[in-house]
Image (cartoon, rainbow, N blue to C red):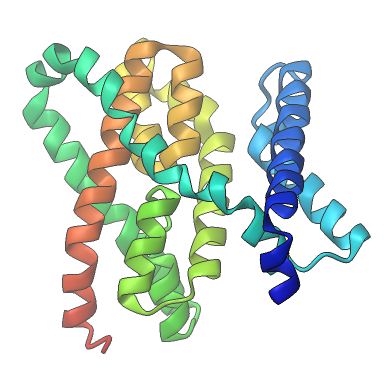
Length: 236
């Protein structure tokens, strides 16, 4: 560990550079495949980085120590979603009550479905604590999982998997919403957090703004409610 600390500037340059390069390649492949959700740049980048780390024999902890500056930007990036919210504030106010109902229902179903399915499959209590926040963005999911004393790595994996599934189902969401891009965007933000929000912004700015509403308020509602659920379930 001492060697990693001494060489941190070089390590950070290599890890952050490799991450950005992998994402840039993923983005290029995504465009080449005409936006196919199977080629989402985040998942392409993850695959490339895993392959590179395995080939070079670099432990994940070492890579994460170097890439931490990028990880630290997740919080500010989430806060920055407030900009499109402000831009669309007038239209959001017009549909406030239907929006609030949809958000509460979506947040409840997202957490309850994960817990119910995990319970039916006989998953351990630690696993249930870790997947309960699968539908909120990574910084919030990590904070919730830490509070619930779950496995943060498992929680991050569950968030990524949920985002992938949300992207794969996005065409069905757009079809079901018809011409209502706001409804589709909200559904993607609630169900597929940051990945769904990014996908919504690619289609329509208003849909992206509603997705950002879904992402941020679902995260806030989940952060408030899940600890109370944990208390009722005697997760001490």
